[in-house]
Length: 209
Image 1 (cartoon, one colour):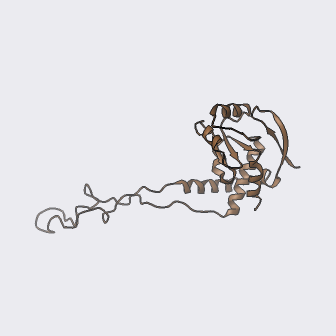
Image 2 (cartoon, helix red, strand yellow):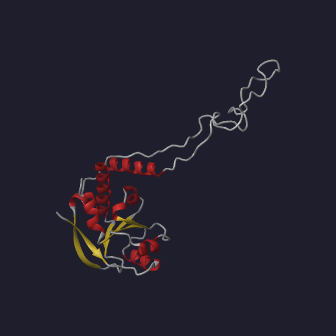
Image 3 (cartoon, one colour):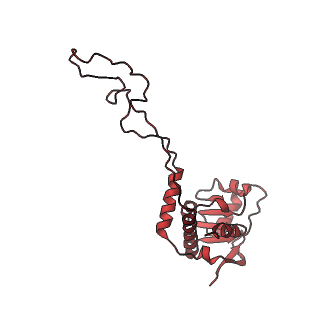
C-alpha cells in the first residue's frame, strides 16, 4: 500500500494529496540504531574545551623551594606540585575532540526510522509553500495552530530566510533545510512539518540506501 499524505495550506485546509516513498516513510523502525546515531550527533556537538594544567604546564616552580634535608620540613621539589595552592591539577579534564562518525548507510537508516515512526504517529504534516514576503512570526504561529503542530520542526526544500527569521523566536519551533536535517533534530521536536518542495528533496537524499 502506497503511503499518502494530505497537503495543507496555512489555514489548515487539505488542498491535495501526495504519494510518499514507502522505503522512507514506511521503513522498518530500528530504535537501537536511532539511539546510536543520536548519541553520535550529541557527541559531535560537544565542544571539548574544558582544560586544566598539569604540574608540568603551570608557569613557574623551576627552583627547589628549600634544600632536601636539615630543615625539618617535608621535602618539596617544586611549588607547582598539585598539593600546593597554585599548583597543577591531578587528573583534571583535558581539551579533546569527542566527535566520531558512523557509516552513511547507518545514518540514513536511522533517519528513515524516525521519519517512519513520526509518520505512523501522525506527527508529519505536509504544507504548501509559506511564501512569506518578509518575516512575520504571527503568521507562522497561526499556521502552526491551524495544523495543530505547535512544537514543530519545519523543513524546507531550500533556504527560506523569511521563514527562518519568523520562527527563531517561537519556543519549541525550528526551521531546517531538508538536506541539513538530522535524526536528533526530528527527535527533539514533537511534530514535523514538511513543505511541499521538501518532500522530494528528503526522498532524493535518502534514496541512496
